Image (tube, rainbow, N blue to C red):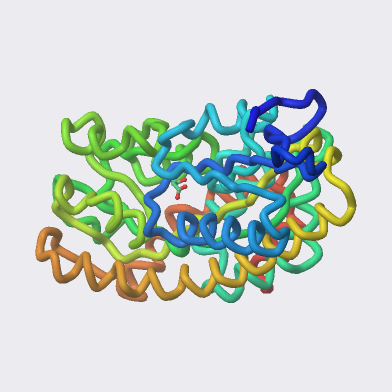
Length: 327
Ligand code: LMR
């Protein structure tokens, strides 16, 4: 079959059979930056499976993991250009569109995963998701990864003082850079695909991520210490572009929505499960010394990071912060 890109239309459409049967196949791409074995990686495959089945083969979803097709920056540009139809970036990478997305980075804000899910599915979470529409981007779902932990290669990180003079990788500027600054550390924004090497060659001393990303990216090979801090979150928004979306019939949109809902339920359950599995893997590797913050330690971090709330309450929006805190 001949693949042709129809202008104004989503992925490529392939004319179906030699008999001239008029059933176009809609070929779409879903790209992401993490390993296939992560909650996001598995949920992208679940979305593919459900949508292809539900549509009786009308849709074909091509999934590209591990920045194979596009890295952090490119995937956003290519989504806007409709060269990719689905991406699921970490929420904080959307701050150029709307600074309120930095909510997930605010230190010690969400109690636990359930509080985050409640926020995502509530009024404020849905409002935030819709805020991208003027940019030609449609937010389809909130996916999760979990709570972030610190790792580094120099010494154990037990108190805010231990961060002085170290340099950490961040996913984006804004709150994350400010967080390390408040702890007396430096930071550098790096694409996810560059982190392992930057840790290995000492460009940065440490980083923050979930157990699952630390595990699947094998950061334990290039880090010596891990602190269980649960200080911030890593979550995703699944995005499509309005050009592609409006090229679909209402029935097709419905199929995508239903497949996405199934993938989302699966993703969140998996995020919880893999968080625990990855923690075990990290522990059993014996490659990093693990320290868990005590309540007393935690209180010191909360105090040291308090200024972030004064600084960012306005640009993030107090109503979002309050909704997150009360979830
Ligand atoms: C990161 O850059 O650390 C994360 O956004 C990667 C991801 O997508 O989980």
